[in-house]
Length: 488
Image: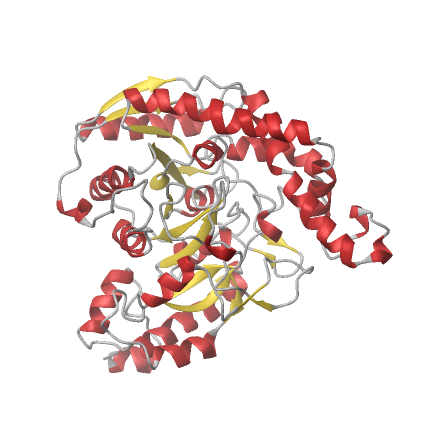
């Protein structure tokens, strides 16, 4: 049970435990799921006005559930946070937009599995409106700040989940990844983020279907939490993949052929300071016995984003049109939809410019030509290493969704996603591992910096094995931001 000292002083004695460690305490009877939930709620309340990571609270629902959860489930009642872009079924969601009323979302297989394994959802985390930008800031819930430096962004769109995990509100949170959202924010926050293969996990969309580029998965402080969540949410009925096992942490990482994409996507160069940090990660991999060879991405960056915009931006046009169809007073003008932020409206306007033929051409290029580049690379290499994001963590206002247009911010958005979005298009797995830091020249604060590793579709075991060895060689669990439950 929770110690008398902790109860009397408010001291959080569980701060250094990951989700598996907390599960073990529950199973041994050293703390109950209900007691642990109150600790997590206290953490969220304490940090609410510092970083604004949790935007919707389900405290009473979670309390009711904690009282009836069984210890026999894999996570035994450990609390968890979920991005406000994920359908849960019995809990409201908003997609972080004023255009949507609080609505009970539709049950989907992925979150049904999350709850069935004993994870207790006690809140939602902040995101850009409809995941429409790389800054976690929306008109409805406001701006999420980086716990390492509140004047810096957490990027997006899984920024709230990444900030919450980094600050210690919860050791494990759920995010979605459509162009890098489970890797770019973890890279900025110093936590571990994972994107699975397309169709590898249970479906997270209405009707049990898989989005073509978006996946659902975990953001965590430890590799083992992330892997255990992955294991228990895999789709065992998918014939494309052999069942994933938890054997990864029980064996040495095999010697890997690693291709190092040092320069980044042509046209979107990696910051020289970031490149030097990634060079050290390449040396770390060599010291662990892996062969590391520098490789080039033979992709025209400008053409890639021309096609990517043709493929992706019309979805915002469709979203806006649904609103217009129900609001005749807007005269079918997207810019009249004041419930949407200015940035989302300009996304939708930009999406109107593409013809159906352009969309078809874009799909052909993205879903055929780009995967062929990576198929050739994975014929030669087991894993690809690169920076997660080519630029350093930006100031909080670098994208203001209430003021900035898509065209004004297109170049920086392209740059941020220039390495991560490729695995979403191809459907193979990828992870951000917090192995470095880089001192901000203005503030002097050391900001976290992730390294991205990719493998061919279905090879998650290779990535998790590598992540374990990197975690052992260069641990990050004891590194805490100033704004965290460790220090406040």
